Image (cartoon, rainbow, N blue to C red; front, side, top):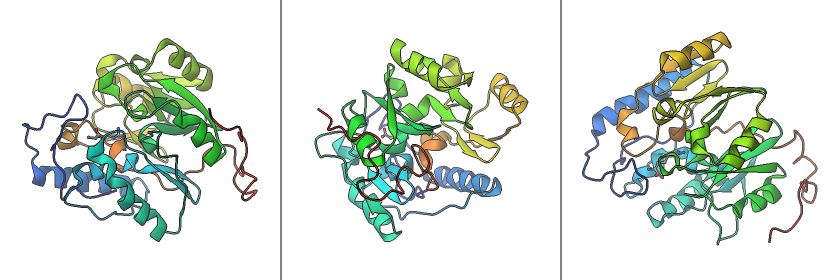
Length: 282
Ligand code: ARG
């Protein structure tokens, strides 16, 4: 996580952002601290990245890149406003012992905001921020099979606003965010989906952080809470209202570091061994 010292809505790159709406820095800070505490109480250990004055969206660490064991694939941000985050993120991961491997320069991909592991595959969104063409490169770099989902609603511009893996069989899903083919892809992938309606989706219910059996979310409509509790999850609600002004909620404010994507061990064969999909993307 990255503290919101310099957070603000200073430009508009998604439909939630209005630079005339002021952010209450103090409230943002206490909301962020409360989220961090909640994650820690649920059992997470939180690493903190240093904030930077010129990078107001750096708080949304989900977009730093994709973590795969000790490998880190940094994002290629679509908007120039966020592109300066990349070297800052790369420096953090390098200094923490990760091997950094880059996507080609001409493709856009916004990290864990648009790519979430489910079972053996990496589900990745495209259109508003990430390019469909990035998926083949991601597959090559990580060794994971990538399933692509086209995002259909610009308010739901990242996959993590529409999809949240809960365990090997279950995920929170928001079909309103996907085109017809994308819905079929997720239907075939997730045996037990918790399906959100549009109101629940726009309340950022899919943008949740799962720590063990705790689901941390911005708001929890009763119907969503009941379904999660019936599955044995505890729900912790964290008000992140200041961050919603920038179009991000709980999950966007975090990046999981203990993630391995693709079939277990696919990367342990060493260089040349991570070739689950070694075809050259066209
Ligand atoms: N203001 C940020 C942007 O538009 C919000 C990022 C939200 N992050 C996410 N993982 N959905 O880029």
